[in-house]
Length: 301
Length: 266
Image (cartoon, rainbow over all chains, first blue to last red; front, top):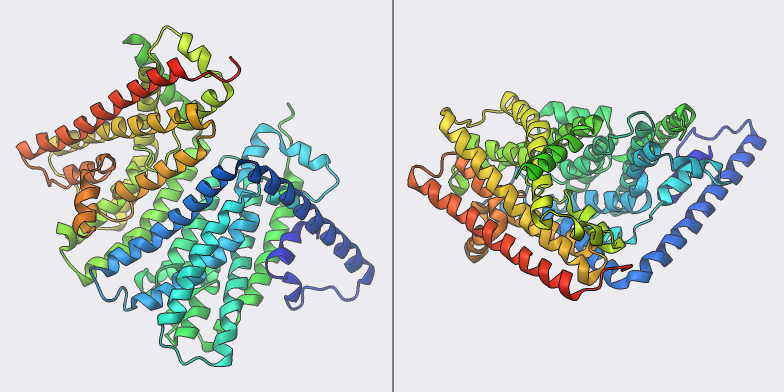
């Protein structure tokens, strides 16, 4: 299970109930060590890329700012919309800001840790994946850490700023449970998006040229979640609830905090499912990654 | 002239090779088209006739944006990365010795690329959009032709901007920062995020006067029949004026760069 190292990075998939084969202590032990090994390899490669990034500080500052500004434009668009209307899909600006801030931060964290996964297709195409396979470190850790881009912090920062704005302006009757929901949403959301990055990477073993398909689920999903579900057609909402469970990254827990009705008439307790859903996503993504890696045939050049 | 036609054909064929990538791109454009279209429906439900568009015109605008995103390179992703790389490595010296005009050479290649993206990435999302939503498609063939001319002018403006971006690498060596700034400006001021007619006050006036509005806002308005009769000539003049001005600046910068700057490894 070294292939799911990223899980620990993002949200601690070990919390997922039922995921631990307790009858197999030595297997668990072996998995643990490979997990640690993966995290260590990830950390080492990340450090290397950090040093190389910092060699061109001006360029780093510009691209980090660019990353911040590019994502900020999404929110500027929403602000421009609200210069013409008071409500969008029945939601006010602070409410949409909460949805936006949660989704943006969660996605930003996943993108920071695993955003390089979409380069896998290129590596499969040009054969450079082979060099990763012969190194004594888990492939997933190597691919995920490849060209680690600290500039992606710009996106996280932007999401946090909008989230902060939402939390300050919203008139919510805070309960301890609702307060606890906020970090839970961010971590589970990051884990769900992260699983999507890994699954997308696995898909690229098959379709080498299709980084864009992955992007439409990750970046597209993020854009989708920045608006309330009432804006979208029922089938689309159904799709991101039951097929690609993005609704658990944001909509369902955030609507609980807002005290809003859930889409599709779902029961109350689904708002607390995100950690479970995140665990399941990582299980599936890990399986997909393994079968993808197993199916990999080098270009042979 | 024949040389540049061959280069343009090469640019077309080069992008036509990536079939899976094109299909994946069409998928992405379609997904984003749907997401944006629904947000526009929510917006125009609240405020019909916002920005001078009715609902079906606003929806057409969304899908036109998806169709032209790659054609007019609003998010970059054309020749400029390669040109920056050639400047960085010093390969540009070889290009300068070629018996062809550097700017025209890259322009021809980029026109070929744009033509492919219009066909490969533009038609299918537009078709899907028109099946899923009620779009305001022009009924007269004249408007379609006028639209294509406007798109072509938009591509030239886009090229001229990106050429300047690439030339900045002569001084900065690492062109990634400038490329990103240009990409940001392109996203915002082309009208890709929201039609520029929705931008308030001075911001709107400035945005509509900047060259980037030639990339999406003007072609979309031609498509939606906002420029009847002689108005169309004015729209074309706006685009062509920016194209010429930026191409000339590009030419000047290029000659300064090649005269004053030491080519890497030379």
